[in-house]
Image 1 (spheres, rainbow, N blue to C red):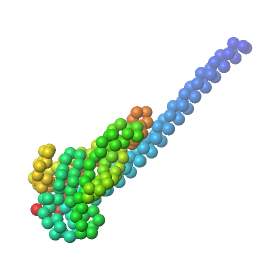
Image 2 (cartoon, rainbow, N blue to C red):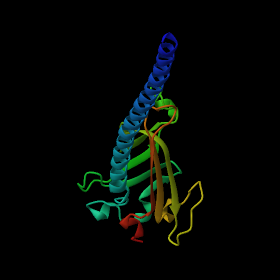
Image 3 (cartoon, helix red, strand yellow):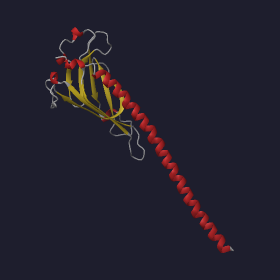
Amino acid sequence: MGYTTILDIIGSVIIGGFILLILYRTNASATENTYNNGSDLIVQEDITTIVQILENDFRKIGYCEDWTKIPDPTKAIIYADSSSIKFLTDTRNNGTVDTLYYYLGSVNDLPNTPNPNDRCLYRQINGGIPQGISLGVTEFNMLYFGALGDTLSFPILTTGAISSMQITIRVENSEAYDSTYVDAFWRQIRLAARNLRNR
């Protein structure tokens, strides 16, 4: 009787250990799924906000309510690089020409976030204080195309040759789960402002 009791206890401990291991793994999996789903939602909301702002601003390159203030759309883009662009537009739709500058900040601008690759995408109006429209941007690349669809090479010395552009953005969450960052990717192919085509 004593021998079978010991076997019963050992069997119970082994079965209990397996059950605890299953519960631990289920809990870890549920925690990971909850974190990743929450992070995915945040990243998707961030990239949606960025895209809405960018599309609104970029489609108005060379636009002014008083069209006589930007009579030559080939001069609307002042500067264009792979991760920055400066152009003329009417941000407030009040007939005043504004200079809008988008650029990707340095990884050193965000030293307090755990993600070593995240940066801030800045939007600056008329040389004022740059406003970060989003944290967590890890990629902001631009390609520029001429009127015939040919890719313009850097450095772009004649910005008037730009007819359309491709914008690529990647956003990651600032904190990782198990060394994995959730990310979202967006690419606008051949975005063309109406006023750039008025030549």
